[in-house]
Length: 116
Image 1 (cartoon, rainbow, N blue to C red):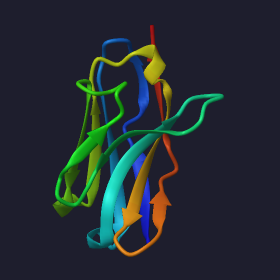
Image 2 (cartoon, one colour; image 1 turned 120 degrees about the horizontal axis):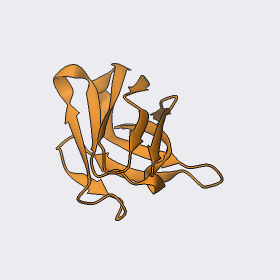
Image 3 (spheres, rainbow, N blue to C red; image 1 turned 120 degrees about the vertical axis):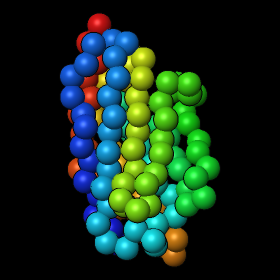
């Protein structure tokens, strides 16, 4: 398994930008998929974006064209660049890693708050 630590959350005005980082410790090479999820108060956790070992990405419709997920294997890090932020993007954002063989790991989450 790996341990994941997120950073980069904060308070931003609508239309602003933030970049989230997720650093993995452990066997980064054993990770297949890495992704970002978010959970707003009173709502279920939802997928935001994922990236696989080959660099292929997938996004939730609500963030397409505004968010970009990327992966730096040399730094054991995955990023989420968030532009044109909206109040409805407010949530706790979680990093997730799915292993090649079996199992997954979650980070502790980082709060993103977008004010109108």
